[in-house]
Image 1 (tube, rainbow, N blue to C red):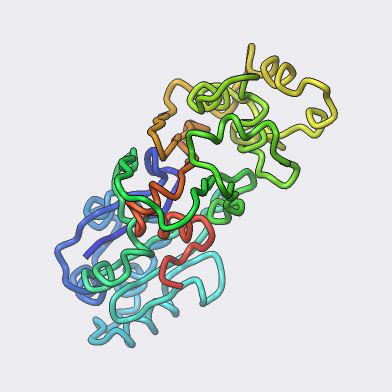
Image 2: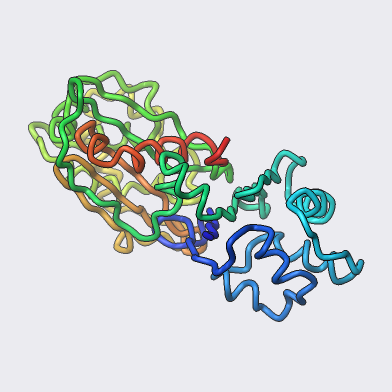
Length: 315
């Protein structure tokens, strides 16, 4: 069975993945039932002190709750005693998984227990969630069935709503290698700020994406608490590239942001960046990929797209 903690406190991919010895979610909770979580044993096994999770074990010990014998019994106990910031729909359980959404007052968080059966049958929803380390594989060996398309997905946030990402931007008819040349000429008012910054920092005549990504990594507006990352006054300028360059010439970073800690990798069909944005909340992720990469990694691509739009991978 797998445990995944979707949290911006947890590394370059903002998530933590652990393999557990239990066959089912019920088995795991039964093994730890009424355990004194202040001992830290559960946190040590999961790799983190998961926000709110200890409340079910505290309640089991304090109220001498009987150890659940069925999934239905465990579900009822979780709805009654597990603390989450949200309504009862934020605790979703079936025979093969538990999915929980909550909030620690700073950012939204989610965690998942997934048994091997659901992992084997739902790869198109779980492949990205279960991917453990940066970077994603960037090989692309299969041809897509139709004309090329490039996609831009940003797992970013600015107001604590860290499970609600901007809509994916689609560039029909171009491969990733053509994106840099395409950016300045495309309509971009509806784009998320990351893509607008990337377009402004692409130098005239530049066809490679990597230099613009490196410049975007220095953009001061992506730090936590920096406000709107794209100032509207740049839209009205005759030379937004020159103005954008001036903003990264001597940037001031807040919240312990360290651009030197960011991770950037550009392949032929996948560009990815884990941008360091805060000393406590860590990284935010940018992915730009084309249909050749999708054809070679269909489950990873599909699950990444779902991950960006829905906190629950099995909804």
